[in-house]
Length: 47
Image 1 (cartoon, rainbow, N blue to C red):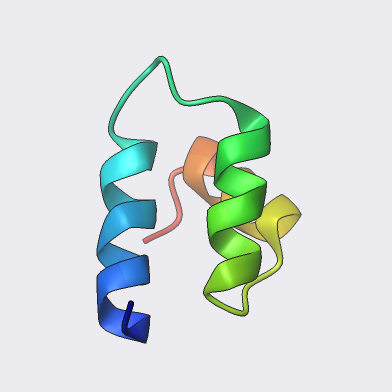
Image 2 (cartoon, one colour):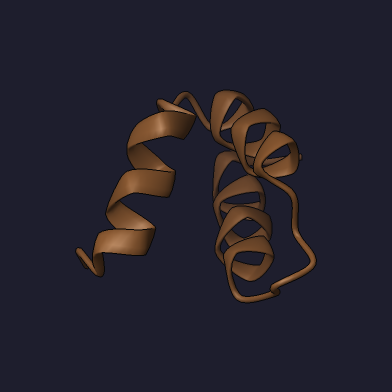
């Protein structure tokens, strides 16, 4: 899957309450992002 496709999956996953931290960490890693930072920014409301 392309980088853009993975980023869209990550964004979509963050929209659902049932998404686990592990899923976000895995998708973030696949996108080359630090999952801890993604979660921190998401819950802090950083765009």
